View 1: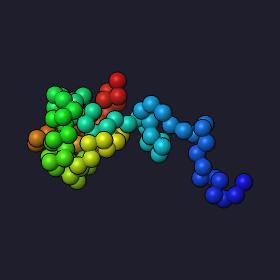
View 2 (view 1 turned 90 degrees about the vertical axis):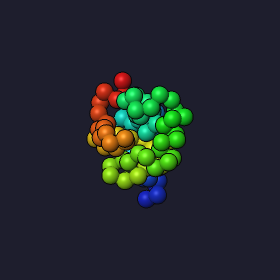
View 3 (view 1 turned 180 degrees about the horizontal axis):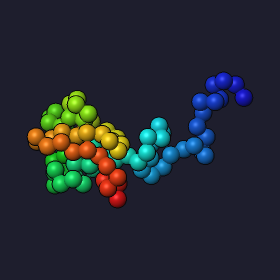
View 4 (view 1 turned 180 degrees about the vertical axis):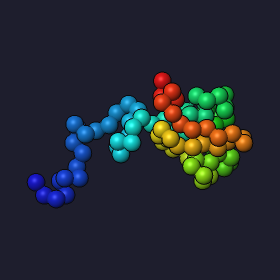
Length: 90
């Protein structure tokens, strides 16, 4: 096996469900998080707010609606601060 082969993620390392390739734990998309927390009623509303730059993630404007969030991420929207926690993945 060459040094380059050690970076290959075979089928046994592939991720599925609500975990990501970096093994940072469960993930939820930003648009889904906003719906889950009741900040928006629809995915369309989430898209508009996010792409307009009205949502901050960990102190920085986030315009990617499918941005993956993990436990501990901080989302600011409409003068409210939300912290991603375990209950957001139920």
